[in-house]
Image (cartoon, rainbow over all chains, first blue to last red; front, side):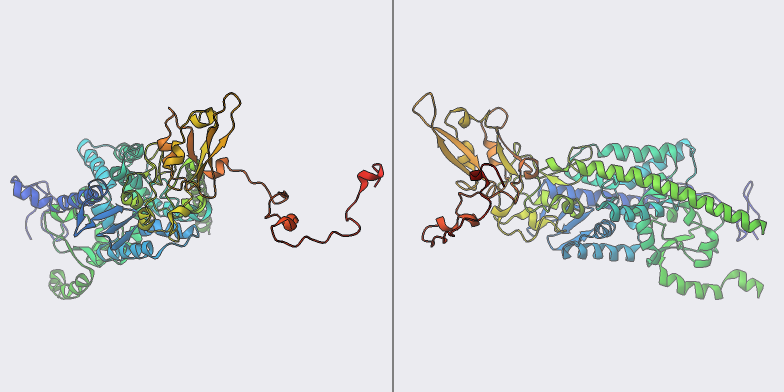
Length: 314
Length: 254
């Protein structure tokens, strides 16, 4: 066993914990920020395509590139896409919809079921940029929460959105959604939607850490339910982890990094994980990687045979 | 035993708290929804828009109709506007609907909030033009009739009638709007030369009355009681003894 370095506890594997250090070189930094940069690229890219198609008439092969917004859209004039949560709310108002939007909602639901439900939250939703910004400022200035709120509150908001859609006859969340206001007004013209987004930002910054995306947003809750079966997950290598806690510092949903459960499942199994990928480059031991659920399951079996602790026991 | 009692009490307490929280949130949320939906009657909607409540429910606020409109007529209501959030509308005095025969906005609608069955743009009922006869140049006695000439459904939606004038031998030519043909496109409102438009498109429900079933317009040939006046119809046989009560000729006695 290695002797622990000064001031550091040895981790569960006996190796000393050491903290994540941001590389000094630009290349190294970019490599650490790779998922962050890719996420900003997809977030901005989607908005830019919507904006360009709406305002500059962007076409490809003579067809509009990406018409509409995140609630409902059409790619190259043939591929419909729609927000499945919005469609669910409209159907609950007892209004049947045209096949185009139903097909679009089905496609989007299938996409996020494949890549991990809350991939929408981390990779597409424009509010993520604001709440990530608030989270970053919080880390820098050490802002404390003003109250505690259960992270499961979002499922109550989700249920409430569905019940109110039945009772009021309008898609309840779509009429007050700061996400909707934000992307609609970025694409189609600015109104007072920025006040709602500013509200979310200030709430996240000063009132409650990860307050909107991590506690309240019913769309995130919807996609968390979808993400429970997603094939793309973050793999967790128990043998490498030294419990340094670097991953939970950057994670927007730190409770999903329950290492006991992760060790048992071999991955971050919770649907509330957004697959944002922030944890994977900051792990100093390389214990967290994107992988496929099925491969992780197979790997878990083979690893358990060659598990060093088991071998020692034998 | 004690433990279960406490946990049951805790459970019921939590349940009450949760219910109260959900109810409070639900009330505030419903109030927001109601106040948003109330702004609706004043908004002019794209062609084929369903009746208000169905439209509010079905519109997914995607803005594809706005993008499809070649004249930039349609706008998407931003938050804080007087129009329900995220829904498309137009302001005819800014840009009216030019009544594209292929109705691209309706074709772009993925949900059916703009009725896919609308195939003839002349059948669209976006609103109804109404004339402020106190400020209409034609009604004041000048020659204008711009609204009549620009109307895409000319001679049906707007006609010009001539009225005699008391002070001179020149007649007045006054525009009249006919609701059974007016699509509410707003080209008239856009073209009206007065400082503030004297002809405006509004939601029909705000200005249109209903005559009611119990009135009979006896002098119209469509009326069932005047069938015999129809040209070529055989006159109804007059009964020897008239029906009904004839109390007026009996000194007021019944």
